[in-house]
Length: 265
Image 1 (cartoon, rainbow, N blue to C red):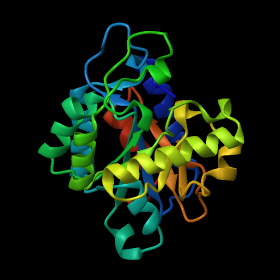
Image 2 (image 1 turned 135 degrees about the vertical axis):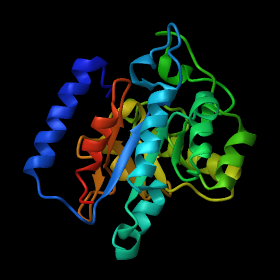
Image 3 (image 1 turned 135 degrees about the horizontal axis):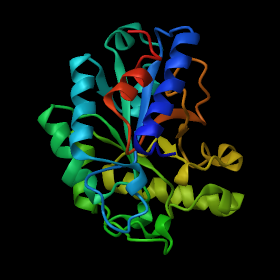
């Protein structure tokens, strides 16, 4: 889901304001944020609608630091969701879907400059060191993806690598057998890359497939990330549909603040 232009940002902000004003604050909830890609607009790319500019991304990350939110991986959030000391550190799980080269070129320098060394990057493993034609499917310009060496380095530095499946195809297009094989291939590829089996899976193309819930644990995963305006991990949150708030092209710092406000400070 992308938030486009000023009117889109205003509309999203209004909806968030109404929710934050009407629902009780949850002191033990962890905000979940999802970025698609960061960087300048690329002519012909279908990702432009969800691409956050470098200055805007930097403003978002500075806001997290200024308000003393502590970026963590999605797995860390899941592991410590009931730990009072962990929750007292105001954690926020920051996720990036796609493992595009632009993450290294445009997002990582800001993260390093602000000494943020925790985030979850979701990878379509068949596309490693290639491009994102698996999702573009002839509808526009493809973009390069991160190679194996740099992904392994990210993992060694503390970034979590999650899975978008092996092929990156929407799970609703796969039958149960092919889906399980796809997830197992992805898990094996990431384990070979990092030395550790991945725990978190994300729905490709943001399409929730109920069939995935039946086999993700068989493939070794413990949670599936989705998109949801709730944007928080609570004790009762289903582990097969973690609702990450989508940060889109037009998302302002005000919208980010409102999304984070759904968790009591």
